Image (tube, rainbow, N blue to C red; front, side, top):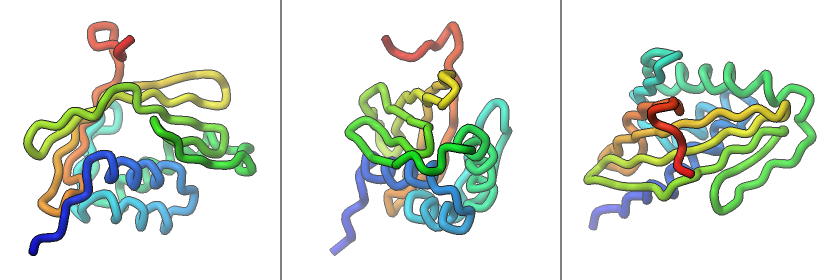
Length: 146
């Protein structure tokens, strides 16, 4: 009997936890639960990242500054996202699947009141973890859904 693959929703919760993990080693382990060892993460500003360590370092670089000084703010998971250390992310669309690919849009909310958002396209590996993430930031031609 084949093990049941986790759903994209279940994997995204695991992946989201990595974004709120401040410790690099723990962040890599959180990513390992959600992503394959050879994960490819592509972003127009960051380029193409390969492997759990590069992705973990990118997350640390992105999250450390806005979380600084907010370490005591409690973290929590909620129906549409998670929050912690003054930062919150919300998934603002249904997760749409097509064969072993899925997409979703999200908005980051930072302590200074700024926001950033985009759409991520993911490819699932045979075991259900993420093999590929392609990030498309919000643009005037491709805004977030209203």
